[in-house]
Image (cartoon, rainbow, N blue to C red; front, side):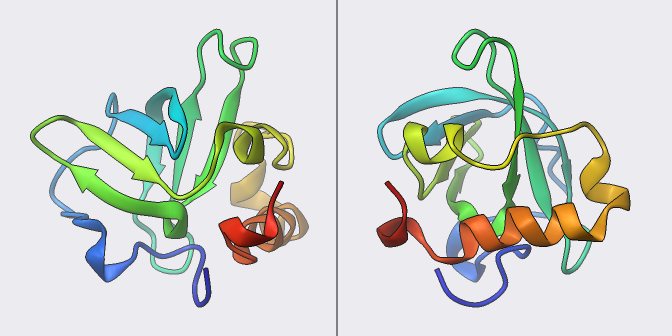
Length: 119
């Protein structure tokens, strides 16, 4: 992925007037959870995904740039990462991404390289 990892791709199908809370999130190799919260702030858009039992009930932070497609009818969001890549991302600490610029940079740097640069 090149460009802004914190912005939705034009081809993702993101409609700003649709609440994504509760949408299922699909990695390239399967289901990872549901959207717990999200933001459309320009330059800082993201999804917080509740992984349920997949990662012991943790949440993960996904920059909006990882979203490849949003299926509004099926209420599914597809991302361009595998489950392993998402599991290896910097640990999510609730709301830290809102106040800690270094953490925001760290998460962005992890995802900016694109799927071809991850395990």
